[in-house]
Figure 1 (cartoon, rainbow, N blue to C red):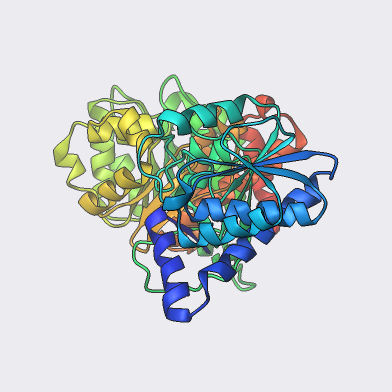
Figure 2: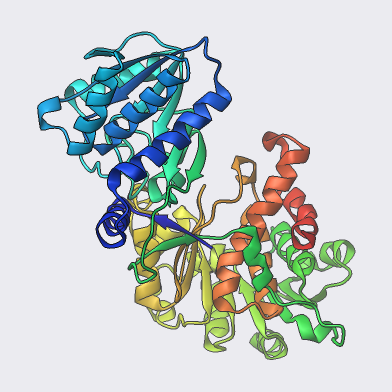
Amino acid sequence: MKYIFTGKQMRTVDDYTIKNIGIPGIVLMERAAFCLASLIMENESKEKSVLVVCGTGNNGADGLAVCRMLHLNGYNTCICVLGDVKKATDDFKTQYKIVNNLGISIMDSIVSADIIVDAIFGVGLSREVTGRYRSFIEQMNQMRANIYSVDIPSGIDADTGKVLGVAVKAQYTVTFGCHKVGTVLYPGADYCGRVTVADIGFVWQETLENTIKHVEKEDLCNLPKRKNYSNKGTYGKVLIIAGSKEISGAAILSALAAFKTGAGMVRVFTHENNRNIIGKLIPEAMINTYDTEKFDMKSLAACIHWCNVIAIGPGIGTGELQSKMVEKVLEAKLPTVLDADAINTISRKNDIKNKLHKNVIMTPHLGELSRFMAVSIEKIAENLIKYANQINYQYGVSVVLKDARTVIVNQQGTYINLTGNSGMATAGSGDVLTGIIAALLGIGAGQDNAAVLGPYVHGCAGDLAAEYQTKESMMAGDIIKKIAEVMKR
């Protein structure tokens, strides 16, 4: 796994590397500038003109160093400085003196260029962009130029991905050391364009607090290997409580995803109307049904007694019957995936909320979490990490908060999933994720791994599906078809 830092953490790492390790800041700056200049030289011809727009902090100093390197490699460059050079950082003044000595044009206004290097603000920005800075950023965005941002697009909050009034819309961003929260969460991620993470020599202590991580493909090695001497029971008895009188698809998608991810046995508990279609489409699944008018709690209890993993919620509807089903499931204390209508059902029932336990993985999207917490979707969207952590702290459950970037919080920490694409914003996609996570629990991946690797597998399958068709045409079933390829890789 790799780290994702907030702006404050990045400044701590920078300070530690310089003061404790002894690597001069100007050395780190030169390496950072070289990485960005190299990308520009790789992508852009020398016939193109380059404008470097700088603030007077160290981000601006990075930009000056980039300008110098491009200039010395034959590019037609000029610099626009925003701010008072007399109040600039020492490193900025050093780089400013060098570009002056080289005779590079320096001005205080935006000029037309084919390439713009955005070096106005770094990861320390926390206030709204106003005045002259706002005007210049708006001008940059209106120009027909390829924009390369230094570390993070100016105007993006490095801690949340929020746009602080206005932000540079870059085609490329070179961020240093590791991703920042603002480069991976939306809307910030949309402003970054293609992100390159450049290793420039930072050193940090493993004890750095509250670090966020993201999964890499190598982390899939944490999944249990299939044993030669095993049987279907070895890989989990997964109970999926899904579907209702009018809805059968959710149960089908969750069950299929569970099988494709490796579950040994899957039992579906659903409304009696769904028996024939599920039996026809998934003959491998066992099916138990209920009648809403004559509901038999003993039948559900028997299913719970049979299984060692439960997923409940996709398409079950909301009401008193569903409340009783969720309550019965939670009382069993088994590894449980709580999704969709199961979350909606208990959103106003504190007595059931209080039965949530450490073996539960909740998988809400923003609307479901909004109902559960009685907080607006807009507020949650502004700080996904904050609200996911709040649920984890308050109820002890693992949280998989689904959005364009899924945030996961469990007992091991906070994670952001970087796989997936907009084609997965389609009906049934969440049901597929439920089945994947349930299967990972069933095969013995463990609570923490299932919560973190489930969204990763789900997103990888979606990315593979997007390679074979347009994102507009993707359906949840297309994601399921690619799960096998992800597990094989």
